[in-house]
Length: 109
Image (cartoon, rainbow, N blue to C red):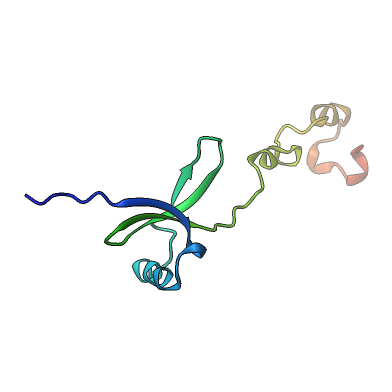
């Protein structure tokens, strides 16, 4: 029975690795990091993305810089995305013409 070696575990940025280790990480992920990347949530609510990488002595969690689209979901909920536009009911009630017969001049904005 082989004795399992307890490897040192480190979290580090890709940029902080030596050039040799950076090259080995690139060799391990020749098609990029996206398939292996995982989100790591920190206790304070922050997070980072990382990929696993192991050497004989150390088990790394390598932080990868990721550009995040910072548009929040709240932007998707703005009025111009709403089907129920404010005042739409009043517009419909104020105009006695059918919609297909109305001109742009018939709508008060």
